[in-house]
Length: 158
Image (cartoon, rainbow, N blue to C red; front, side, top):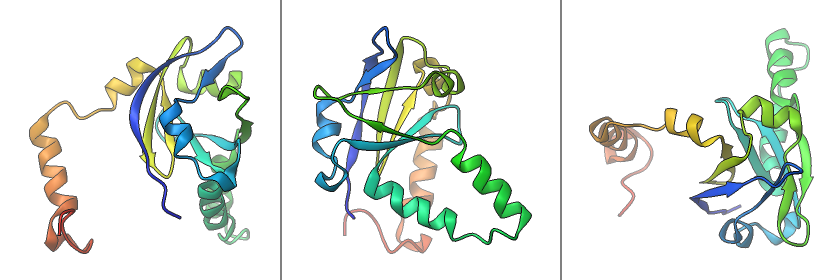
């Protein structure tokens, strides 16, 4: 499955707590997912939105964990906590449930960030707190993860 959800989009919630998925993101969703998406709590204080096909891959990995192992059960319980399926309406809006908005601190505005197979939905102030501010640190991470001797199979441009 080759998805390329990318970009950073500033959005406003309507009074009912709905968010319009940006047209460029919606246009890159796989047809097989239709208007169905899966919304989960992120590991950071954000929400993560998956197309159904991408979610299926993650779901299978988590469900493959041994249910008789207490640590795995704890992980599964917390990972699936609050998971909800959302559906895009005819203009591309979807509901952000109140409990999910509270978890992420999202009130009236949000930032949607495309990350390949998924999008994160952030409160703008919290998002800024989780960005790398120092370009030298960012450059070092790029070198660490994207050079030929890192075991990832080579640089981006071959």
